[in-house]
Each structure stands twice: as C-alpha cells, then as structure tokens.
Image (tube, rainbow, N blue to C red; front, side):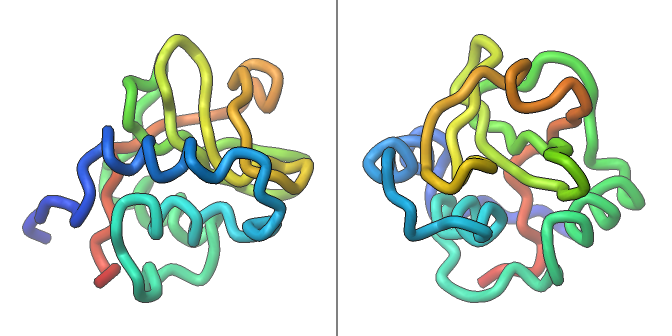
Length: 124
C-alpha cells in the first residue's frame, strides 16, 4: 500500500493534542484522538486499537526501542491496547487510561509497548 502524508504533520498533531490537555471528552477514544490529531475526520478503518496494532504488526510497521517525537506508541493498559503520541524523551500525550488527555511518562503507563510511524492507511 502506498504511503501518503497525513493532513497534519507530527508537530501540528502534537500542538493539537497539547491544546486538549485535561479534556475528559476523549475517554475510551485513544485511537480516534490520534486519528483526529493527525487531521483525519473520518473513521480509521480499524475496529479498535488492538485491531490497528494487529494490522500494523502484520504489515511490518512496528518498532521497538525509544519512540521518536511524533511516533504513535502502542501500549498495554490492563487488558486493553491503547495508543498515544510520543513527545520525545520517553513521554507521550494522548487520551490516557485514567480518562483525561494528558502527558505521561511512558514507563509509568506500561513496560510493554511498540511504536509506529503515524500511519492511518484507511483513514480519510
């Protein structure tokens, strides 16, 4: 599948996310929050974060190690797969497990994570 650039680049997406710090409106919508941050108004084409992670894994889009700024970070929180965006230095921003948009240390959220480029192949 040919890659296309997102409507918003990583810095614009991060700015969009940081403007929403403290919002509880995104509880349970971690994937939708990231999709909207990168500028896609319509559905991602994935059922949920776990479905997205499976697809990315099957298409060799996942990486281990320190996620670079602007990367999507996929992590486990209890039984759920969630996604946030790396702000760099081991920190992420997104709709966090406790219900609000915030910035957190990735190491405090999960020791089980991988990252991908902000790739939404089915979004529009």
